[in-house]
Image 1: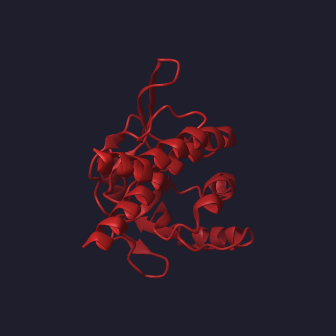
Image 2 (image 1 turned 180 degrees about the horizontal axis):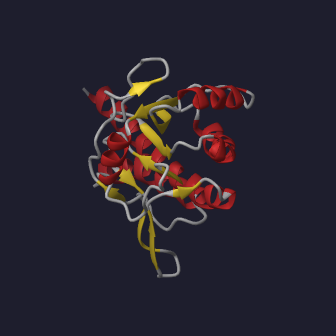
Image 3 (image 1 turned 135 degrees about the horizontal axis):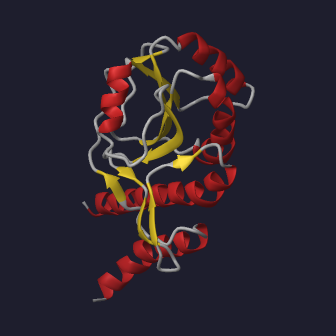
Length: 218
């Protein structure tokens, strides 16, 4: 019994306390799963020909479409509100998906983003229209891509390739469902997405502590 109390104090209580103070909007202790085990994209093209994988990474996933210039403001919002707060977490990455043929636009975008600071952890991935649509359909989302294969929403994907979001009831007991976060709305990134990313990172910090403690016992 004493052992269980010690474990609770060491591992569970800090997480609950952290989430209580860190999350002012989200009523979930663990961020619910929207879609389990989405496909990986490790065979898709990238600007630097290096494969990008979702497995074993906490990923912010976006579908930009062919009108890259139109989405530039969304990139700046995402960079300032989400990326800068989490870039030092080694398993955190940003994965943005574009249709083939937008490579030159993306190079210009990368140059603009570089003015904000480091781009470590940013990945730009390209696929055919059919590849992108097929992949998106497997996310099993309510929202749809537009006719340019883009959406202003970005999505949180955990290390096991589960798409995470809000599903259940909010603090007022009202039904709540959120599968993505609108990058055009700074208030949504600030009031909702920041909290939800914190929860995912807290989960893995807790898992690391548990594994470290188990290793020490062994």
